[in-house]
Amino acid sequence: MDSYANFLFHGLLNDFLPKGKKNNWIKYSFSNLPAVKDAIEAIGIPHPEVDIIRVNKSPANFATLLQPGQNVEVFPKNLKEKWPEPFSLLTEPPLPIRFIVDVHAGKLAKSLRMLGFDTYYDKFYEDKTIARIAESENRVVLTRDIGLLKHKVIKWGYWLRSQHLEEQLAEVVNYYHLKLYFQPFTRCLTCNSPISPVPKEVVWEKLLPKTQLHFQEFYTCNNCHQVFWKGSHYDHMLTFIQKLENK
Image (cartoon, rainbow, N blue to C red; front, side, top):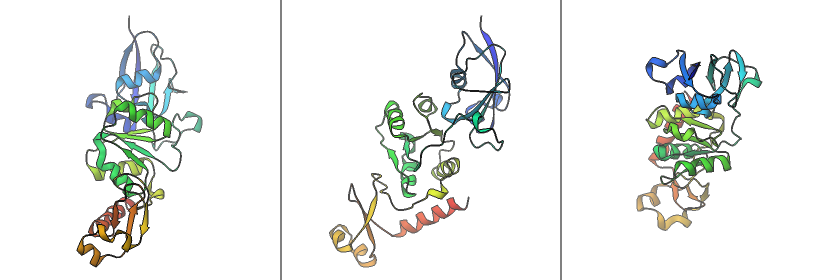
């Protein structure tokens, strides 16, 4: 015979629930004694977005075994309510924050690189590859795939709520408090490597005639040797960054 426990999810965790279950107690049936983490993910919430778990108003962790009749409250990161430090299950990713982005968010990877953040992206990465790299290199996973975030080896991850680039970037910047760490135009948008100033004469033959005539300051990628200069795209990116900083 199945047993039952009740779950209530707070804040952003409701984004993972269907309309009728948001901000309401959910009756969860189970057999044996599953870990609380397994129950939370079975309901639909990936563990990297969970910060606080309370079972019958006492602090619990992912390994806590679920008992019949218990009331479980689950809280996200960045909720306005302040908790004692021992309650928290989330640690902050090490600085400088580094990311790995899945196939659904390639444009976001370029935008994060534009802001100076080390961001891996390869459209051929499988989920297990992303999880392995995230674990071994302490990278934050950014994805639209909830299932990817449920890989147990992933410590830090965020499910992108929006499908629109500017909104996605604002989400990530705010969630991980990135504004203090912007280093714009220091990283190659194509391959993620650092870029460095280069004399104009060194890249002269790679430039179009109008670029040769109107621009004097150039940069090159230390890896793929792509050449960059402050053209109209640069002004557009500056405006984009200023909008982020003012949000």
